[in-house]
Length: 415
Image (cartoon, rainbow, N blue to C red; front, side, top):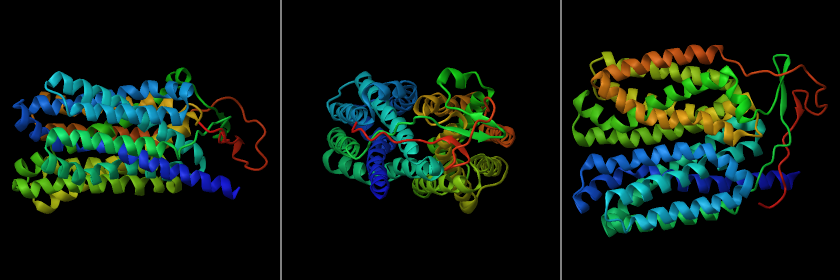
């Protein structure tokens, strides 16, 4: 038993290494201006690359679960790490925007999303009793990778130039993802059914999940969470300059503040959700988000209010996207977690592009913040009312664990 527990924590370490490598793609903003200066491209055209990356990341999660079923988690992570690293390395040789879009956008995003959702879901399966904490550790590592590599990639750009920086970045990421994968082992769910509200919760397939109203309600909540957080991350410096009257250098500090509070929210709220309930954490975080964007909309901002509001939104966004994988597992079972969460995760991709379109349509930051506040309150109401779907009538309980019909059994085969 002790050996089994030790092995589980080795898998945690491997997943952390993988996730930190994957999270480095969120340093993309460092490359925008250097690429503009080097090639003479338009800034908005270069910045579009990351939107393509985010969309490819989200879409790839729809197919990642099927690839994992065919190849196994370790082989899938090795392939994803090689493709991700190669995409960045070859990006060092690009000479046109369309090549950048394909390599650093589509290929890197798809490889990143495939490894992200499968390694996260696999780790949750190994710790069914600590879904929130484990999700927080994994997603927190993703954010930590972004934070650390802001300095590493920034150093590469300054010392070797932007094109060579892609080469070194890709090489390191490939080593991290492929190396970390050798510590990861497949967790196989034989069956997980829990007595919940007098009925049996089963492991839902994607088709079965999509027949429930709960899947669509969860999507609405997740979309709201992602749009609020991702919209803020993209414009936080501009808010400081235009709405709080800060100078560019001071407002730029908010970028680091967002990264710090985003990462801390992932770890803290993830662990808290195991103790107080996941939907309670989501409801509380959305209420705080609604309050923060209301302040940004109606209050004359100063230094303190600006940074407090930004920190609150970043903290809640990080926490909510961490808790959601565990919520999907609670609602629809662990067996098809990668596939089911891949569907809900499309709220991330849609949320990533919706904020900018809505801001353009409504005419700026403040109307968008007001809409986010309304959507957040609606999502709070949904989160307070929604319950996991039940199925059938209670069967005999597991004598060792009265709350479960059958527990998860990790597959001991090397993958």
